[in-house]
Image (cartoon, rainbow, N blue to C red):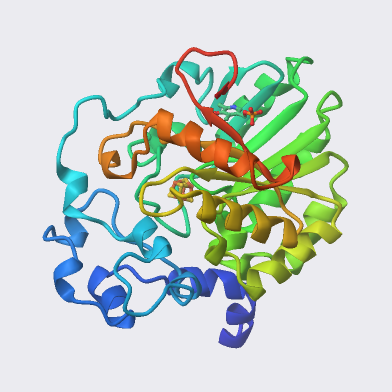
Length: 334
Ligand SMILES: *Cc1c(COP(=O)(O)O)cnc(C)c1O
Ligand code: SF4
């Protein structure tokens, strides 16, 4: 029998932190000394996409501020339940681009693996909140089919690990998958899209750094931060460790009403990112997913904000304003 202490030692601290994430809106509001009435009237347990926020991320929210940009990203609102024309369950028609379960092949030369539906944080604006992860998350055995698809196509040079959040998976599962990808001779780049280094910096531990550092592929890690205050000292340290593995760090953000819909907020984000060694990449217009209409910033306003950024920052700190259109051959740059 394995002694209990050994079992505990085998559960990485980040998994314990993940298990302790806040899931009750009332608890979050209490922590922030905010009134209960801000909680959604709907029972959180009944929500298809309940509140979930790691304690470390909640600690970066301003106490007593109901409009805090970090809080706004995670607190369910009753507005989510109101249907709005033009906002649907699968606005990107992703189901059509899945040749094998768990693999999206929309753009030339790169495929995206949806490794898991799990995330450390539930972002209310998420475009995958209605994604059929049941169909899209093959059990381990089925990875063989996705890997075969990549093996048979020499024009695929890059694999994106996505989800959900791919780093919500344990290193015990990720490291062998990455080794299999590395063994495919025509693959050159591995890209990881994750919010975990920001919302749960504990995730960047020795095991993760080891497989990432050993990987022969050119590694790009795209973090998702929408506001400068998401990046604090601990996040900065995690990002510095990631950079030491030779991984290029990029950021993609979503333009969100009440979170980062001002030139000042966007400039603050770009500056905080570069100070942590992260290059701004995309600023996405919201995908029109049911339940997210209250976050939308119209395109004309987005263009004005970007022009404001350009007038104030060096070019390398101005992200590309982009939107995703079903059937297009790439993201659409605006
Ligand atoms: C966004 C996306 C990519 C990556 O697009 P880039 O412009 O290379 O960042 C690749 N595959 C899918 C399915 C995507 O949605
Ligand atoms: S981390 Fe990404 S995939 Fe997960 S809920 Fe947030 S936006 Fe959606």
